[in-house]
Length: 446
Image 1 (cartoon, rainbow, N blue to C red):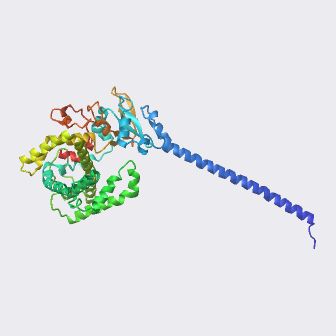
Image 2: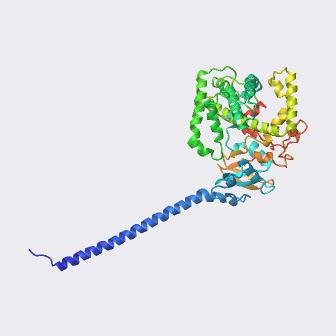
Image 3: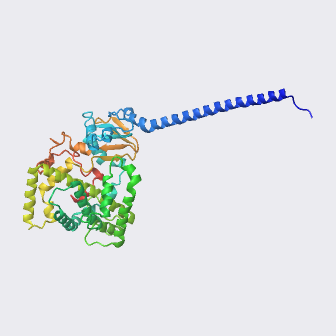
């Protein structure tokens, strides 16, 4: 048998080894470059994505030639709020006071551009006249205006009065925590007149109070995120309570749920200007309406009671004047207050109105463009074009505290709303209930 010379075998092995060595180098080189290329593509894509999401929107108003407050990356104009140095209302008021007499300015809530209105003529135009350009469900609430008609209010007044009396009897002699007591009272009142549910005030562990309280305290600039993570189960709980009431359909007194059920059954509510009293609601729509009435009512009612209590505690002259009116009214009806007597209490109405001016339930009103909308200058020239989906902010808190419309705006002065003075209030400078068709449904009871 012939064998290859050992030298030939050695050369062959060396050649193969060298080939594999070079192949290994080539593979390493290609792999390294591929990894480098993919890493470069990944980093480049990430930078592009971050630019599109976080940085590009910050130049939005500059491209539109709109005066704007320079935003922080990611945080927009809310950085002092994030740091806990200002409340959202105070920060928006500071932004509102920027750029003097500009009719509108550009701001950024986080990375989202928002057009803030400063001119009342623009507030009127966007809030009341050109409403067809903006998304709205106002017609649904207008159709339910009969719920807050005079006869409805009279029928529910006794229940409200009884709950208020129970609340006063249960108040401790020492100081109270308004932020705990008033939300509980508001929940008790609204649960009764909306759903016919009672004893929320007495029961410290009541599930309805716990659910609504947590929902309200979770409302913040991060609400959207929290809705995804935490709020949905509580909303479901409220829905279950409402569905239970619908199935039982028991009501010891007149309540709003019973009136909504009348609409389901095709019955008419009390006629009211601007409402379609023959609207028919499904069970799902009734549940959603009752949820909204309960949650919105608790928030606005409790915050208003807190504001009035604090202002009257500080301003003792106004407190004494209101007490005299209350005493005189009770004397005139032998200690049994009625709905009509309550409505006739003018100074009480002035105190409530001034509290709503200083501390509006909603710091801002938000409008979303349902279609492209052109904002024009006073001369009729194009100022800015808002694309569909753009946001417009009406800074209610800031306007209510603008010295152009209310002298000494930080002062609590109910006389602004006396019969002699309220005619001097500039239209659209006072918007505690909203503006136009988006006004709070509770306004129908006023």
